[in-house]
Image 1 (spheres, one colour):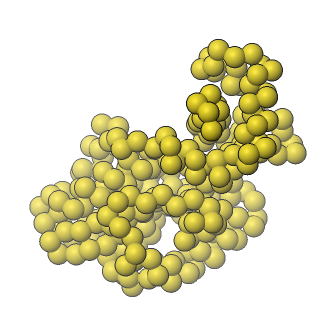
Image 2 (cartoon, helix red, strand yellow; image 1 turned 45 degrees about the vertical axis):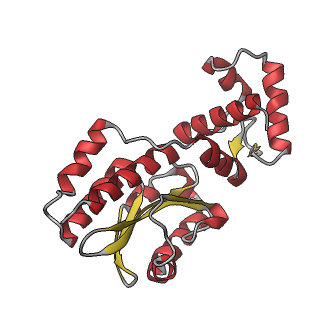
Amino acid sequence: MNERRQELLKNITVQYIKTAQPVSSKAITESGDFDLSSATIRNEMAELEASGYIYHPHTSAGRMPTEKGYQYFVDNFLKPQPPSKRQQEILAKYFEPNDFNNYAIKSGAKALAEISNQAVFVAFADNDFFYTGISNLFSQPEFAHQQLMYDLTRTIDHLDKVIGKIFSTISENVVVSIGAKNPFARDCSSVIAKYRTDKIEGMIGIIGPMRMDYQNNFSLISFSQQLINNLK
């Protein structure tokens, strides 16, 4: 993919993540990020659509990222960077370096769910886990669709099986899984990392729609992992 189409896909993805509205060529032109004519932008969007990176719903002239488009975005534009100072301060209150206990981690998970506006789980073992923030997902526009709501509730019902299956396979690197590659639900995404302290090894992760803020969630999980690793 040439650089211009890369930047165009990035722009569409970032705008759609932020607004949950299909992105039109007019919106891209008005963003001021491209010194291109509307016709050129439309042609480039048509090429991205033909390649399977974006699509347009029948109800709108705008475009939305496909699963392939989100994957390209994550593979090429995600950067290791800390969350905002405010987010760091909030999480640091719960993950105190000298205060390791399950209650503290659960409280930290609740704070993480509130910050990210997603669902969060933490696993202390393959058969011992805690989840929170499910109501955050129900407030997302994607979950107004009955089928997606059903898939999510079914995933929650079988969360123990999924965590048991992936517990020993997750690496210490932050793993972003999108759509069909996501072990929890194929219409969602997850950002997961393994943590390791002197006392325990476990997992922490964010689950949300494919239209999630991947950069922020990646930064939040990476920072939370570091904090938990320092617990004593």
